[in-house]
Length: 193
Image (cartoon, rainbow, N blue to C red; front, side, top):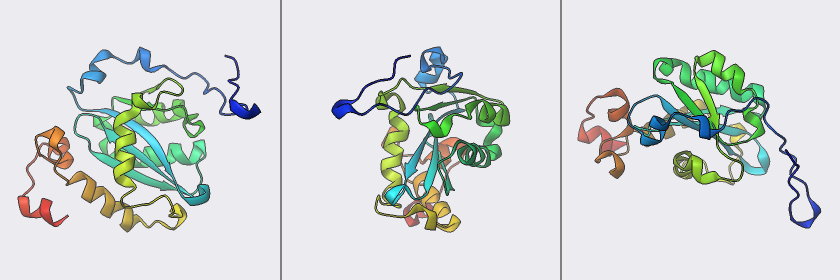
């Protein structure tokens, strides 16, 4: 693959992720959002690239999990994904990422979670649109000017609870928590969060 030359004489230094599997090879049923277990993953970067949040969204229920990492390295991201999704391992069939270098250890992640991992096309953020939208919601709790190395587990849990207990129009005004766990949340709990 040719190195893409950018404007003003800069080169794309992202490189190619070895052994990546294209989104074109992903089963068609994943696009339909008819069954649980298909996730999208991405990272949210802190101020001056200090710290990051690894975000994963289940495509059918919109259920979101977040893990903080001090550095956006492949090893740190692999550990964060493993820690975030292991409690839901029985509901992890596929994960789709963008082409960020932090996902170069995708083969290790696939082995850890016994799942298949796919990558969107380069320069096609709409192929991971659900996660991009969720990252926008996450920015309500962790703004761009925030140094993410200072984020506490309590803050992350609070943000996840608020996101997962927020009624969504696309889910018939049910919450991601209700859809993911096939349960009913009382209205007062949803309104308090």
